Amino acid sequence: MQLAVIVAIVIAIASVTFAMQNSVPATVVFLIWRFDGSLAMILLLALALGAVIVGLVSTPATLRSKWVIKRQRKEIESLSAANAELRARAAGLERQTSTGRGGSAPAGAGR
Image (cartoon, rainbow, N blue to C red):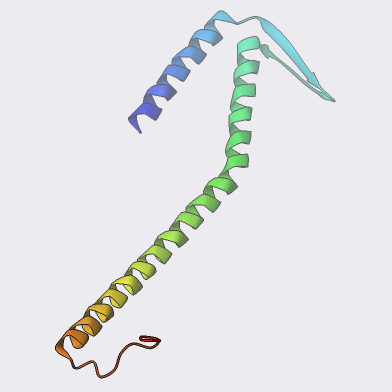
């Protein structure tokens, strides 16, 4: 988390330095839309728009991954509980077999 904050501060400082050095007026024309502003402002707006688009595109994959991880953790917990139950059952059967109270051999033994 701290690394992300440090990286964000470095990017912010670089952006401000860039903006101060590129104050030349520029015009952007797209279809019927026209925008006049400094070159730095236009480039920073393009950077921000790109970041928003990346965030929107990556959000579904991130959410899907979190859901899969959550489902797998629940499955691991249930499998661990089943494993513990089977180990306890096996230990009980081994005790019965060692004391001679088991009665009969396991199915398929001696064949």
